[in-house]
Image (tube, each protein chain N blue to C red):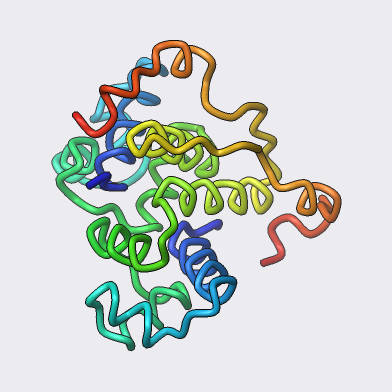
Length: 102
Length: 102
């Protein structure tokens, strides 16, 4: 079974290492305990949405980019081909003024 | 702040309604309490990875497709444009025999 938290952990670690940051640096910036972040990266703990947002912020990576990478990896595990990026109708209706109003 | 659980809840509800299923039907198939699934759909509860997998299974939607929709909606909220689908190097290295071995 493909588990979301395992992929989230892998993706967070990969982004952190790509940016040359230590666990300690990101945990400190995100105000989470180092041991907790380590468990999240190893897929042993489910991170709450608030903690995910804080860690994404500390990594300076949008949470959408993290979740996109998670979905891409899950798709490879599941053998799923997802044909398109953002659905055309959403792009057509996209209004920058509405971003953040939900 | 864009919260992952809010988008997950919206996406699960949208897929369920698109398939014409009731909360009761999906909760039963996924072996989760109806009230719990309702709270997940409203973004009030974080679903564990195991429960997400069960609900995705009950909806007959791959978890990767659910998370892809979640990331697309988060990208719209964040005003992020994600340029590509699966990274080219992953496609090049993709080996169907490896799917499910992790």
